[in-house]
Length: 319
Length: 282
Image (cartoon, each protein chain N blue to C red):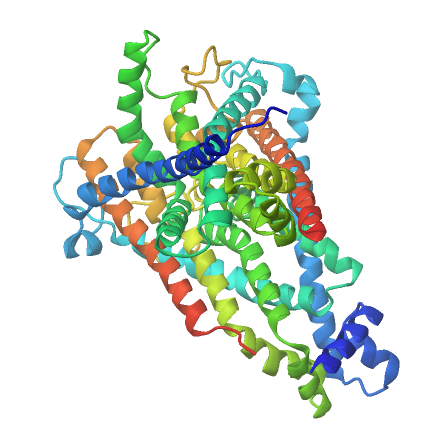
């Protein structure tokens, strides 16, 4: 068995193209079926690449009218007025940034706590089972239901709170959206954090214990520093989620196209303005501007995802 | 660094675990609140008539979600048709040629695809299909959901195939079975459990997706089974009713939310069941 595995590993290293490449080089007995099959799965792989490139190119082409008309100033202009035909994306960029960062700030302490508990303290047992199922449940609830719940339950609560602290009692707004978003991204960040915490090598922990460290000291001085880049990547990926989240935010953010004045004012994120205006956009420039916002959203989430995946990949290779 | 007393260190150890436990279990509060609201407001609405009748205009009592249920089923079916064959084939490609340079590119692109916001997929389905066909249709929504399912199906196929030991493949090849038959008749059946789990999970994920449907399937008050016409869907109905000003529509939305949550959780449970019953073990 061990020998067979060794042979397989050797073959796999020598022939990165898989077993067919090996057969190709060493025999002449490749049937038509094999050739068709290899081509077919290769075509499917190519299709995935073409799909993603196609999405990018389509967004580029369809936003060209807006890019031509407003240029780079699109990002810096705070004036979004479909009636006057003036389109600037700044209110939505700012809205997205504030909403996601606030949500992240709210979510991180909870997510890291869950990651530590499930990754280090309770690997199995009833507590762990309960917490893990709860987190899974939170992750499984559809975003439109979060939005509905936020609208019916959270918005009145926030309105009461706003009356108490004497700000305009909209109820809906950046603050409410951030709370809903925070709840939604906690499971995601926690799951990724747990994975990297579990990867911390046992000998490092044992070394610290043998020098008399308490468990919390091991967590704070050994596990967290060792897993920090992975946890950071998890938080980054959670940010990617928050930036692209649409329905829950659309329902509770208040849909205002002006630059938000405070965290309690209604606003719009990039995703929510698309959701709100896309079907109503009749003239070309309005539609193109919305597609351009979609393109920006696409670019931002791709960068966040690639960086996050890269850090996690590196962390898991090192461990 | 200042020397701390042993009892102080034990105290801080206890405080640490208490602190993170409290923070962790605080997360249960919103979960329980959401579930309580859905169950309390939803269960009183849900009955057989609710499931089998069409929505009614405001002011008329009764009304149900039958068209949304049918629409959601159509959309899930279309999404599976789009994503399952392509996803499994791409997963086979990634696992069979796992070390080739192109496989790295495909893997990266799959991960990026998974990270694309659903609203952007909605825009794409609008530009690619709705605009070309000249109207909203179930087909465009199904394709949008299919694109969202694709990365999950690819990853689960690849991950499961990787778990299958080389000896199985070698035994088959040594018996003179052609390579493509080895993959299709030996490896794929062995991995079927994992792939099925992935498909069920991705169905659970897309069943509640609303954003890609807003400007593709659009919603409809009628029972519609033509895939070239706009249909209704459960999450879309919840969105439209929830943002309406009428209390009776809100209660219908609670009922629909209850049905949707039960379906999504049921799918999650089913995937766990399949995963444990039908595990790859060698």
